[in-house]
Image (tube, rainbow, N blue to C red):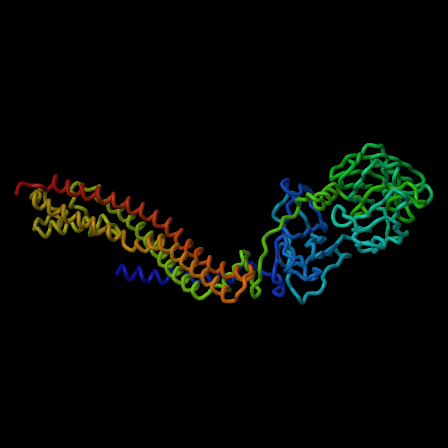
Length: 601
């Protein structure tokens, strides 16, 4: 009866394992679009361990740097047209545009507009999808920046004039400096200090009445002699952001109010540094270097009166020339918050720690497949490997069934033993336990007790038949005691056999599983090299799938052996404890029967 129940449980557990396996293989992560084969998770960390951005930012453009260390350029189209970015919930397509994509040198710069970037958080992420040969370009630079940006210049051109990537298309019409040299992010603009100026014509879209922000990456090799980084003025009325020596200076003149800030914000020479200047209308002027506010001043000037062409790197006559390099010049129509400025610096610099890149995931028929290339491995497993894996799965199913059923059996035995011993210890006469009114389920000690009582009854002592017998006690001779002991010892051995039954399957799993897996590995590697010899050529692309398939049998062998080892160790310890309790009961029961009913006959 017990074996039939064990067999039934085995088949049920095997069916559950197969169902679980099917679910794991078919139902991995949700996939945004089945036409894209690959994806990668880009985590955004704004905590102190990451970018250290404490303020929540809305519609923030995040720089995604791709290179051979975090991205496989062989999986994407040559110009990156099939790149797509999806929100962390894997449903919303995000706006983005590619600043540069070089599949030969394997480096790309992509700007992605994140709808909301929470401060001091490490749970947010975006998904990068790629690997669709039929995809067309999906980038949109004009939607990658919020409407407050009035101009954004990446300086990613190699010739001509710098172009605006923001929505107003404020392209420059004049530029005499150098382009195409390495910048802080991609390429940058070089100003020689000899009259190189970038000019953007006057346009009503340039409206500073609600505030102003200028930000850029700057690299200086020497002190400046009253150089103008940014200027917009007609006559004496206007706004100038300059550098005197190594100090940042702001001049504001609306015709009525005039202000020149102190030389208190010093820019370090050599190396790239981020500079940002914000001006609130009739309010505070703030200067930031490398994301930190270093100087403030107050002005009553109205920025609404400031008009004219915009010039970067000097004035209209070729004077006040700047000598150095600039990259990523941005102009905003509001005074950006300190958190925003911190976000720009912490997400764009060479040592930026905002983004971290996860492992590549592969789509199989629209269901996300985790990396480790499981789909490739399963697809390349040979027939001999499948046979070995099938045997290992059968062995694993048997071992799991035995572990689960045996664990339940030992739990029920221990519970039954406790119930019986409670009744047994409450009686003065060891053979007077009332077993008729209280059924004891699963107790091994109770089965040993019943065997002892039957032994006494067969010897016609009848000591166990009437628990309410009168005070005169039936005598049990020493010979009967010896017979009782033998019966109890046999019951002890039977219980030990019952508890240890089927454990040999676990020992087979522990010792045989790895060796069976190793057999599949050796056989698979042997087949791989034999096939390579037949073909007469060798390359890593031909060898790797076969070797990965062969090694998978060893993995399955260990998957069989490791749980069996833990389960076997636990079960043996429980059996040892129960056997010890049984042994103690056998000795005590025989002694108590001799003490209460023993006689000379």
